[in-house]
Amino acid sequence: MCGIIGYTGSRPAGPLLLECLRRLEYRGYDSAGIALFDEQQQLYLARAEGKLDNLANRVEGRLPPAAAGIGHTRWATHGAPSDRNAHPQLDPSGRVAVVHNGIVENFEALRQRFTDRGDSFASDTDTEVLAHLIVDALDGGADLADAVRRVIGETEGAYSLVAITVDEPGRLVAARVGNAGGIVVGHGEGGADEQFVSSDLAAILPLTRTVTFLGPGEVVDVRADGVTLTDADGRAIERAPEVQPFDPVAAAKGRFRHFMLKEIHEQPDAALDAIRGRYLLDPPRVEIESFGFDEARVRDINRVVLVGMGTSLYAAMIARHYIERFARVPAEVDNASEFRYRRPVLDEHTLVISVGQSGETVDTLAAMEEAQRAGCAQLTICNTPGSQATRLADSTVLIRVGPEIAVASTKCLIGSIIALHAAALQLGRLRGVLDESTAREEIESALHLPAALGEALLLEDRVRELAARYAQFDDFLFLGRGLSYPVALEGALKLKEVSYIHAEGYAAGEMKHGPIALIDERMATVAIAVRDEVREKMRSNIEQVRARRGPVLALTSAGDESLEGVADDVLVIPAFDGALAPAVSLIPLQLLAYHIALERGADVDQPRNLAKTVTVE
Ligand code: M6R
Image (cartoon, rainbow, N blue to C red):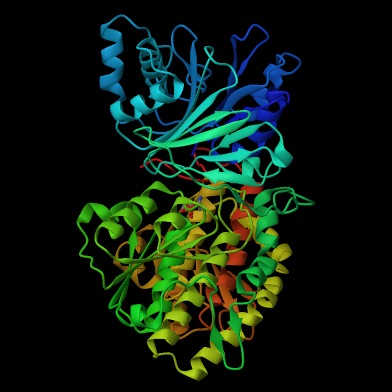
């Protein structure tokens, strides 16, 4: 959710923090702020409601020379978006400044404690109590790192923070409490005495690739010439920094108007990256370099539970088919936020597969912790190396599609589907249940997927035309069956996320059981009726909508003309056989959502109320 950045070193901190905040803005854009030490070593604070540009305009020409400071982009939880609720938050005397991501659950009780003794509060945030608590501890003789550790003991909830104090300009202390978002420290390159602290690896990678990730319950004391890592009780932790790869091109918008469009167009290459080296012919097989389960462990599994949120949940729903089809193990899917609250029955014979772009979604991490307590085997499908999900799981299959910046996930879904398909094939092979001809068909079709995705992108002009007409509707149904059911859910999610149009995805067979009551000439239906074993049933569902005067846009596969004249509009997508077919259907739906959003003048890359990484429950 919120983006956090801190710097200490010898470079001008203000411009550097603003530069990093640009790369963090996708995490939240309700407000932004920075705190620096000015020439008198006093705190210089600047905050502005709304996008980062508002802050940048406010500080232009006014930034004091400073060699340390902190910055924040906010996704509001406690208190409306406003200047006074923006971070950094200060204590009343201006001695301490804090940026924070996540939630302090007992903040009301803590706040009461301070107001009872006469302290005033300047914001509605839970963050502000952290500044009060730190000053309290400093007043009691603690130094900044001890004060932060003491705060961890007094607070409930999951969050991360970075704190600074005028007592020691140039020192930052950061902590990760639970699983509400990570903290990564970037160390100065080439022996430079400088350090960065951030919620996101991507924010600091252009500045340094040598980093240390914090685990839950860890505190890092950061000075320009070095860092000290401890647990919440102050016990030293030795962890060697790691070097992360960085591709400067991947994080730039290039010739595209929006990151979302760029990432949609990157999908053929992203699919290639996801497949490369893993799908092998002669003999046909999948080999995932990091697959951490041997034959004996895999044969011991009698059930698979897939968890994720949002788009990643839909990837998991598609993968349920893969696991059952190729690995012949009973599989179920759970919304990660519901999973742990229904006391799931789990044991060491259960394989839990979590799916996520960020590897930091708090609900998914909580589900993983539940699985860990029950002794399950855990595999995570993740796009972010070093993220908490990769640390919790026994084994990780990296999605390998490069950084995804747009809030609306696109290429990561395609990559997740491929990674899950590969994992299911590998499980099937290790369990000895995958026959050679199925393996060959799936591997050959996977190798053809990047080309099919490229062909699907050629539909953009036609989709743009359709978008111009369909943008007038305020309500949409997306219908699909089988593997296309999660595709329908994703089509609806993409549309509502970026265009703010009401859209619902349904299993097409469910339509008659209620949603059909909504259908009239003002409710548009998008039906995914591609070539598969349930296509004829989709055709009947389309007829049922048309009989009630509902306009229908149908997706069909090349070579199938039977829906001409049945649906109002037909979008013919490349025919694709094999279990990866949903990836091909997704491209026109992503483009449809994108172009309808443009028609409606919506802010495609930073849709209102959303955040890229959801680190609060
Ligand atoms: O990082 P994750 O994949 O765990 O994130 C899960 C969801 O928050 C995410 O997919 C969300 O639904 C996207 N905005 C969808 O476009």
